[in-house]
Image 1 (cartoon, one colour):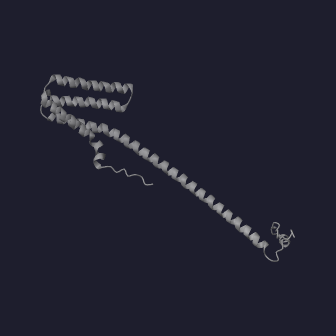
Image 2 (cartoon, helix red, strand yellow):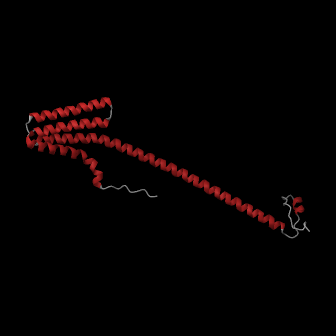
Image 3 (cartoon, one colour):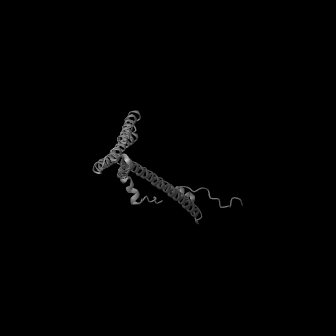
Length: 202
């Protein structure tokens, strides 16, 4: 049976690779919209984002100590960085500082994502290798069992043909004119079973 094709559109395959850049660009765009709507030089808004960022970082530390779940810790610190980035981009006037922070945040996001991509790739390759080895093992067992069954069938056929030929030879030999089983026994050949010609009943 043919394996189903797993070809995906290039956009679907490229989407996970573009996710960090899309995330940081979205945060930058929202922060600049927020900046244009009153967040520029707003101490209250900056204090709010600072508090939220520190809270997310603290949550990441607590989660790391309590559960050790790297995904949860990474998510908490990513949220902390995004909040800090949004706060600075919303507070600052002009684009140079927000763009600098965007480039740093994007590079950091790709650095973190690359680690998870390597782990995922390693696990995928290991799973594919294990699956391939298991398939090869099962295929080998199936081939061996097929050969064994074929051999048994051929042996059975050969034995049946031999028995049939032997019985035919015995019948033919007994029906030959001048056949003398005693002479064959004296010559050292195997004796035939008693041949009933039907004359004993008369």
